[in-house]
Image (cartoon, rainbow, N blue to C red):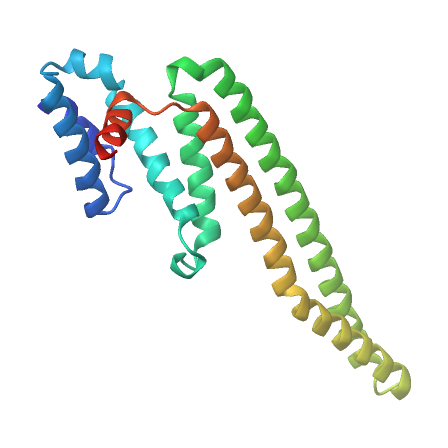
Amino acid sequence: MNDYIEEFQALLGQLSPEERDEAVDFYREYLQDGGYASYDDCIRELGTPHQLARKVLADYSIRTLDAPMSQQSRQQPKNDVKTIWLIILALLSTPVTIPLALALAGVIFAGIAVSGSLIIAVLAIFFAVVVVGITGFVVGLGTLFSSFWTGIFYLGMGLMVIGVMIMLVPVFKAVVNGLIRGITLFSKWIYNKIVPKNRAERKGKGDQK
């Protein structure tokens, strides 16, 4: 059992020390109480250390989605992407759902691809308009001395376009973050529907009642 727990613990490097200790203590106590002494006994009960670790990492990552907005960090989009990846790994490492998990992981990847395409399209439009604004500004400077009012017109148009795009940056950022959050919540929904709680989790909940 100790070899199993040590291998499991080594795979939880993404958790904080407190979270890692909590998970390790929970499963160590469960295995000790159940008399699962050998490595093979532990695997039959909880799956391989890799499978269990992926599930635990996904579970802890999903917890951050349920935290109040005030407790969520400014790096939430980055954390959401991490959560999506951990959920996919957990789905693919669940033996009883692997065929279905592959299909659902494909759906998630498709959602990521579509969202990525939308993000790239938005960024392309943004930079294209910025280039137009800069070009207008440069043209205005170039013609300012030869044709004053024409130069003023192009300068004004260029500055206006650049200013509008700068004002829209928060909107673009919100759209991108919204797409990422939507995929994350969808992935969480799939995970909760597909990945069953293991016996240790079910027993733990039963003991709390």
